[in-house]
Structures are given as C-alpha cells and as structure tokens.
Image (cartoon, rainbow, N blue to C red; front, side, top):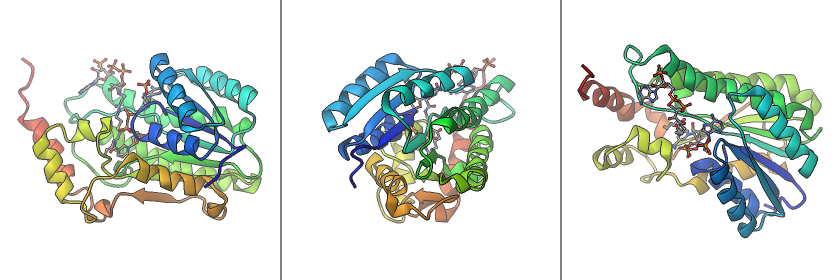
Amino acid sequence: MDFTGKTVVVIGGTSGINRGIALAFARAGARLAVASRSQDKVNDTVAELRAAGAQEALGASFDVRDAEAVAAGLQGFRDRLGEFDVLVSGAAGNFPALTAEMSINAFKTVIDIDLMGTVHVMKGAYPHLKRPGASIINISAPQSWLPYEGQAHVCAAKAGVDQITRTLSLEWGPEGIRVNSVVPGFIEGTEGAKRLAPSPEAEKSFKKDVPLGRWGQPQDVANACLFLGSDMASYVSGTVLSVDGALYQRGSGRAGQMIGQMLRAMPKPG
Ligand code: HXC
Ligand code: NAP
C-alpha cells in the first residue's frame, strides 16, 4: 500500500486503535492529520507519525462535541494538507453502566461524543473531501447491532453511526465519495477493551471465545483501513466490516452478559 501524496485525517487518532490506524498510513507515506481533546496526546502522536515515515504530520486539539471547533479544525487541516483522500472518524467514549443507574447526562455524554461527534465530523469534513475518490471510514463497534448489558448508550450511539455510514454512502456516492464502517473485535491493550474486561479473569474468558484464538491487534484494524482507503476498495461503499476473528458470529456472547453481572455485583452508593 502506497499513500504517498495522499492526505489522511484521523479524528480521535491519538491513542489505541485509531493511533494504530494513523501509524499504518504514516508508514505508507501519507500526509497525516490527527485530532483529539488533549494537546499533549496530539503532540506525542504527531512526533511518532513523523518518525514512522509520514510525508507530513500535524494535529489539533478539539472536542468532537463542539461542532464549530470541529469545523474550524478540519478547515485548518485542509489549508495545510489539501483535500482529504481518507477520513477516519473514531473518537469515542464508553463506560459500563446499567441504564437504570446512570444519569441522563451520562447517557447523553456517550451519544454526544460517539453519535453527534460523528455527525459533526461528517459535516465539517464534507467540503474538504476529494471528489471523486475520498474514502470515509467510521470506527464503529459490535454494539451497533448486538445488545450488551451495561452498554445501552453505546449500542444506541454506534447503531446511529452505522446508519450514518449507510445513508451517506447513498447521499455522497454520486460525488465519488465512499463511506464504510469498520468494527474492531476485542483489541488487546486498548482503553475500550480494558473498560469492558477490567480483570485478568474477564480478559482470559473473553479471549477463549474468539474463534481465531487470539485478541486483535491495532494493526489488524489498520490493515482493513488501508484496504478501504485504497483503490483496491474502489467499489466498496456502505458496508460494515468486522475485524474480529469471527468473535461476533457468536452474538454478544459472554461479554454481553458478564458486564451486566459485574455491574450488579458492585456495591451501590448509599
Ligand atoms: C456511570 C458515569 C461513568 C461511569 C462517567 N459517568 N463515567 N456514569 N458510570 N463509569 C457520567 C458522569 O457522572 C457524568 O454524569 C457524565 O457521565 C459525564 O461524565 P464526565 O466525566 O463529565 O465526562 P467527560 O469528561 O466528558 O468524559 C467522557 C467520558 C470519559 C466518556 C465519561 O470516560 C472519556 O473521556 N472517555 C474517552 C475514552 C474512552 O472512553 N475510550 C474507550 C472507547 S471504547 P453526571 O450526571 O454526573 O453529570 C468504545 C467501545 C468499545 O467506545 C467497545 C469494545 C467492545
Ligand atoms: P481510546 O484509546 O480511548 O481512543 C479514543 C480516542 O478518541 C482518543 O484519541 C481520545 O483522545 C479521543 N477522544 C475521546 N473523546 C473525544 C472527544 N470528546 N473529542 C475528541 N476526541 C475524543 O479507545 P480505543 O479503545 O482505542 O477505541 C477506539 C475506537 O474503536 C472507538 O471508536 C471505539 O468505539 C472503537 N472500538 C474499540 C474496541 C476495543 O476493543 N478497544 C472494540 C470495538 C470498537 P483524547 O482523550 O485526547 O480526547
């Protein structure tokens, strides 16, 4: 895969899976822009992207809940790097919590980051996408179609993300813009996996469920993004691609239940 001369923007690209995606495009020679809330994380990532071989690398700090800040940040990337060939939208927040026990604001926080954040990124990026040829990749989750106890907020938000993917593939397809979602499996060492499997026992138990016999690595997800971002995928749009070692063929399985059991066993305040 050679992305020399291509501009790749990764929103939420400063840690975990999304940082792995940005690094893969950097190694393939792209011009990179990353964004997240923490300027320190942005600076650290930009340095790593340059060292990995990015033709250029820069970043900005903003919160995806702030539509105006997102639009301004994306305009800045366009001014410095040109039109976007690939846009990865992956900023997300998640915590396990039972619906009856979480506040309205807790539920709304995840909707605002994962779902409205995606809307802000799509709308902010739209004027800057290369036509024809741009590839948008929304980072989704199995919660978009599988119910998990303690995850109603993420389930609702990511279902919305995948419907945005499908709908925009129709609306923007005639302009030569492709839109797809990628669903990572349980990806080792990431914040998302730690939050849902917080003990070594839970980790071990979930790992046993993966038909391919191992947890995923950020590079596994990055490989799918390299494909979707390339001309090899020039006729692929509107799809939701799981990169999960076949884990989700089992439904939400043990994880879907264990999160609920873990939360019910926790001491209640007061
Ligand atoms: C119940 C909680 C809570 C918890 C926060 N809240 N954590 N409620 N249980 N564990 C409530 C707060 O009390 C508050 O409600 C509201 O949520 C907002 O909390 P803040 O801390 O003010 O929010 P903020 O500072 O904006 O931080 C957002 C965050 C945080 C989502 C809460 O965790 C974060 O920044 N996360 C980013 C990193 C992350 O989550 N990575 C994992 C992505 S994995 P009140 O009512 O008190 O005001 C993923 C899916 C993975 O997305 C799938 C794997 C299979
Ligand atoms: P992570 O390391 O916590 O990454 C989240 C990224 O988003 C960080 O760069 C974070 O940086 C940024 N971010 C969070 N809230 C933001 C906000 N409000 N505005 C702007 N940026 C924000 O998480 P991860 O586990 O690697 O997950 C990455 C993606 O994969 C997410 O979309 C997640 O839903 C999906 N996923 C993960 C797994 C898994 O196994 N980990 C499984 C399925 C799906 P800042 O803190 O600096 O803002």
